[in-house]
Image (cartoon, rainbow over all chains, first blue to last red; front, top):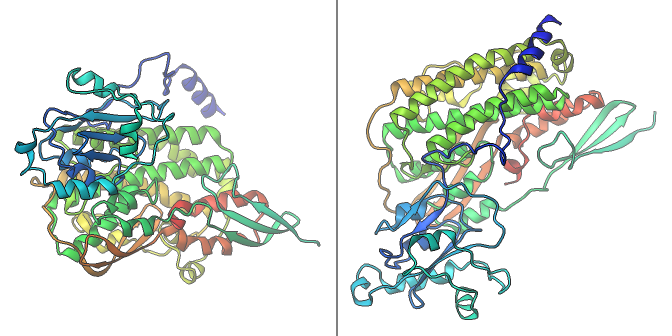
Length: 172
Length: 358
């Protein structure tokens, strides 16, 4: 009984172990916390090694149309693409990811100087990987592309594609 | 006396995962228990055959949310065995550290769930409070809380830095001190003893006949711990398997509490003996042949059978998880027990149904 009273009083005056999250501050993310996958489209050569290494088939690379796309719904944030990228253009930050409201694609238009990139990125590999790494066919209304990361990077290179039927049918 | 059949599960407040037990009752006493599983089959073994053998590491990690690291460890050890890869010594120690951290969080989770099963809510919250610190360690070192994806064929993907090791050590010291408080409740509390002592006795002979594994076997007096065979870096670490002889639910609880202390100790030893050097070796070629890889998970022994044919896809991956070995013993323990003890008994085998069905 005395033991219990001691416990009760201790628990009454102790600091709380939980946080009232929206009211109080978040715990800062660890340095290594897995957040978002970010592509630097300036250095990307569309070699599609990341698309082939991705265990979840979340990345689509299309050399013809010149885009790199990440389906954030399929991505398991394992970091394979980050370590696989020969140009170190994919990186991972520790932004905390909140629940998504829309189906989210991180879409980058990448301009590849065609003659220069040819030896580094063989075309057959890109073509072979493309059919294997298709994301689930997005219907036009759920494909609201919401690209916070992409927009942040650089206004000139990165485009926010509107859900235009042409690109959607290409990815689908 | 007329017999009644009570369906227990697949949805039941005490069950974290779906398993159904049809309990044939005579009054308050269980006469027979008929299990049915198959509610969470996901076909992961088949999926592993369709992916690259390197990518399958991420699939086997998702077999079980709790012992995820050890599943990937069993798998990569099997593949490394097939391909004759000698991984760096540091990677072995890193694997042991993460495996023991995983064991800690699994045992804390189990203690909390056990407390919840006999209705001790505050004890449940207390143990899970400590588990949160361990999950923070996992997030600090690898970036994720549970599915930590730190293994790859040929080593590990992440390294633990010196500062992180200091944080791990201080957290372990802190937890050990706090664990003493919780231990008192589990070991000495009248309430807990009333619900656990003498409940669901599995004698040593029965345990051997039903081939139970893990803390179940050690709670029944069988000194069987695969870590003692010295796989990975365990051969360089000093420890003795925890064995209790009573064979009841209380003994299984004691085994797990003591294994928590053992894991603290193993983490300290591994950090003290940690060699410097690389964490991974490059892997070339494809695996060929067949192998069996076993290791001791928090719930017991897991067996991986891998058959590879020299291509990037595996021909067959078969996983035998510890819960699969422990369910038959549950059917031995249930007959003769009271209805109010069924949740506790189901919990003491530490059922992981998604493991069992994969």
